[in-house]
Image (cartoon, rainbow, N blue to C red; front, side, top):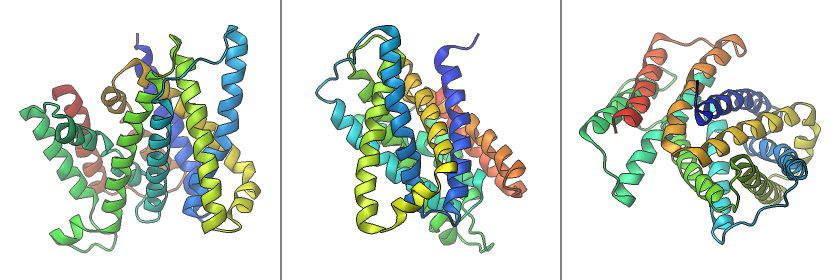
Length: 301
């Protein structure tokens, strides 16, 4: 029988894939990249708040207290997730859906490297080999769409940069979100997760609405006009966040990320079945290398 955090990680990966499918669709002419990013938070926030209130009423407890560092984790993680999601939406315009998701999955490798540099976390020789394998996978995937060759174009192209940056921001958000859930004074893992989700999505919605009103006049109206589709993106986003946040309360983020690699398989299915995109043999090989390196990093590191 699967442990709860494993099931939650798989569930979160599935709903996140569905959310990215809707987000890609909205970003292709309906909304700007920032507008599509904002929509996922804006439509998830009220759903998350209602879920917290309904759950507390059902169990008969009030809202739990939060620790002094809770809001710091919420604000840092929320900003990092906004920037990460924005990068992913921009990435969809550069490469196809499945490759974009795989680039984002460098978050696991980057988390290990940042932990080693900043915290002195031990990385074994096997883990270094896994990281090197992942680097090969990234290089295979980062070939420019026009077929140009050369090491410079492999390393320095827009798709590779966006994917790597999004992975870094997602790694930061995951660590701070886990920190936020641990600051909630409750033994109920689901309640801790939901309070964190509600706080994060509310802060993200408020912050991004102010920014969009300043930088992209009229985009808020377009987000509202796209509500028939965007509300489903918000619903999928909330369900995915529930899975991730609850798993973070139960297990180390690195292990949650490792199981979450099943999202690569989900994204390939979405890319072929829904977006009618062709996956080349090179791209399949690159995704396989990167996925294998991430799994090996967690198992052997």
